[in-house]
Image (cartoon, rainbow, N blue to C red; front, side, top):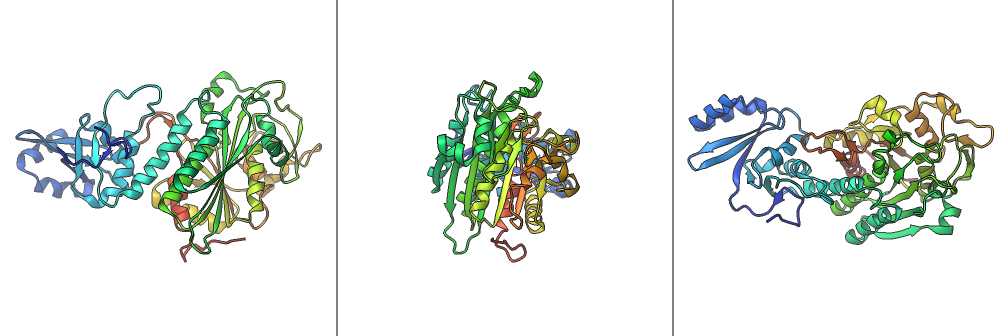
Length: 466
């Protein structure tokens, strides 16, 4: 029976577990020399080369004696993601080298993941006996799975209320404090965010999670997530093809909800403020209109040049609220622009940052976790493209270029000078199936940010409280 206390594909039951050898190409010749002649000959005949994600079974007198998994030359967890479906259905395996356990558990769980809320899986994944010392890998896998599940859930079953409830669940489970702002308080305190959700019968809200590690002097880190549960584009309506995946427009919020869970479970030495702007951008007689002028929490006015550029309106109020708490750093995540995907493709989130120390910290976290991000510039010469005659600024640029940069420059207007801030423009989706990355929602940059926050108090990368 599956172990319901662990992600699918992982188990604590070692009964009937067969040995699994994880091999890199450079180690393959020595590994073959140590095998019985029949098994070595079998692998050679199969053409096994230890390529990333390559699996092969080892024959024995009673049938299957073991298996081999190729890791390739990468330290990333993805090769492990091939094993749950590459090995026999429901079979159980134990690592010959338990030192690989943390990465193995992470990659295996992500490879075994399938979104099964509406349709059961066709097969049971192969299971890995959880190695000792793999707790961190399990925690990160479960955090990513939470984000994937949220992103994959259709908007009919995940509206603003349900997204806020997800924040509540994480807070209550892991010792955080939860609160929500809605109704008149939201309209007064988060007017731009409220305007985005005004066209939907499902009322917008801001979900807040606060958590303290208890470590004296721990820096406050604010996380701001775009939680647009479905984006029609508003009155500037998206074409049908552009609306197909808009259930994932709350991907930034889902990623930061998962990150908050991982931070709390690993008890990183920080204080945490998570803000999720949960809204639906719908079409109705109460929806915001092109050329409306909105107030924002910061006091700046914004003319609506396009109702489909709504994510930055959600984030601008969240950033202003976060800044009022004087955090050491603010990080936001959002499925914000198609321009970022044109520039970097689906796998690389675009990173914009106003602080070299924070940017370096996220870069180090990205490299340590093999969870890629790529920095793009906050090019100040383009800032004037947001200038407007009717309001302090427009929500879109005057030129049809540099869309991701313009969106980031818009957000920067709501961050006080001197406050370290990072903005991640994510895709939050896998277009097709790859080992460890099944088609559907993806928690991009979650591991990179977790690793970055784990470095926050180290001497080599100091935090900068305000």
